[in-house]
Image (cartoon, rainbow, N blue to C red):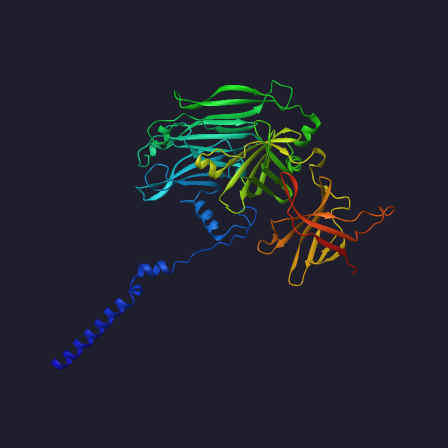
Length: 516
């Protein structure tokens, strides 16, 4: 029997050695937790590029925005998320969230704010506070935090518009708390409303310079005041406004009205005012084109301008030799003009809200609210008055005398170009093919041609434009009324800027009408 038990013992030892070897060589197969994690499926929701996300949004930008708009807890039935702030708001080295949402189950629902923090008792995130604001239109909202009072307390500001077309600003101040989340009965006191404004004009925070001692955390700083602009109902001129100043009252902890200052406006013909104000489409048509900055001293700064392009839903900012292109997302009519929400086409997490007010029939006032600026507390460089570029009679682009569209084929050294009467074109060369939209128009007394090619990456037109000055020989006397496209034309590449038409000093392109 002993030899038999000896054989059994040897077999057991061999299997044990094999098991130990397998555990050493293949440790992951014995770790069920890691296996479970490895088998977790990543759910990817396809999101085609569009006006909301930006056609040029790359994967990194998309992931950053998705992470930024990711709530730590689900909302209730009927609640729709509008925007989120993620930050360490209470100094516990852990991110909290302040979210704005609306409730679709409520009629004329205001936008709500809620504070989401980690609860050590239940070991999960939950809401600790919620409250309504004065805004009701989600597309006009800007949510940010700022030390308004100067004591380094957290103030949450939500600006936006309501159903009456008024600008609103609701301000909540976070109550002094320990780093531990508040108890259930104290939750209503987590944030205190210190101001709520509604006005038919605009609202802005006037930041004042604070001392170096404040910057170093050694002393308190001066509180910021709030300026609101609305109609002067004591005046017969609809363009006259009043500037209402609100300052912080340390006694009751509220922002209160402290001063009212009349702001005279220009006299504008009432019929034209009724056409522009309160009509988003008419005002968009009015601002279409190039506007250059006018300094407080009245001088023109041609190095800074804004180009509004409502038909193509774009806004181009140019300053400090840098061009920024924003997608025009939506606009709302105000008493004095238009409130526009936009998104940068390159950095999609960068958003701008633009308040446009009519100053005169050739000037507007611009106030820009930028998400990044609000978090950093830096004054925007785009605020101020702007005037339309070019002489009064040439400030709007018009179809050329030959019409915006033609039906013809032209040959040239660069290839063949086919113009269709519906505004489409096709370009053929030896090793290239292009198609897109074109338009002939007049500006500053000169005829121009604009080409916009189709970009297959975005499934639509490219954001880049090619603009050419069109030159053609004069029509012989007596043949002005003869129909048909011109026999020859020369194209010279140019750029439209604050100084008008600027040549790029490239070679000319000669085109000759082809016989099909």
